Length: 128
Image (tube, one colour):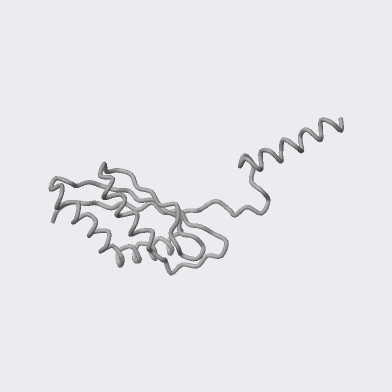
């Protein structure tokens, strides 16, 4: 019986170390923004979208047929910084790299101690 309990303890420790179990003090998983947070995030993005649009304008000069919808996903850390950014929806890697580089620079005026927000934001690119 004692050997069986010891094996379970060792297995639990291994799973925890390998990421299979979360430690008791692990931060909560990211959550979706609530109504007021969504509004604040949208306002911030719209106010800081010009460098992202410039990424598209530079790529459009190289590929005049470039257009489409890019969905960017990122987390807003408790200090307002952007982490875990990614994008899907368009096949222009240079555009994606540029857009994600600009998004990485964003610093949201949101402070939620101990929480992270997960955001998905659609960007539509088309010539004027």
